[in-house]
Length: 182
Image (tube, rainbow, N blue to C red; front, side):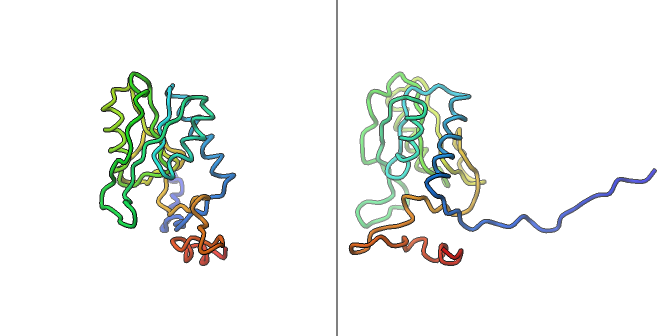
């Protein structure tokens, strides 16, 4: 009896180096993430990690029609960048006894989310879960994410910065965006 053909690929799919996320796609990712959460969990409050995590967190809280608070966690202190993040605000006390969803824009090492989890658990919520817009294929995995990939993400709020009195492409992303013809 003849054997069925075996198809093998010898090359990996093309690797996306960066994703230039626009506001419309960001909105769709927030909707998708809110749906994932709503199908599995009923949070009573969303805690967004500042700075960038509060953006998807506020959108998700609005879609879920629940309360929103922020928690300031950062690796930055002025012009200094720390190796590990630190907490710079108090956990909102009204998360006590409630189901909480902690939201950040992206996770890689998980240091920020682990710190947020420990801080929120210290206030004794009923339950706490994590969600991010993006997660890496390796490393810390939140309870929910909209997309998992390793490409550098250029978020719409980060794409441009003010230099002098003009909006310019953020120097952090200039090479990547110029390479892609933007």
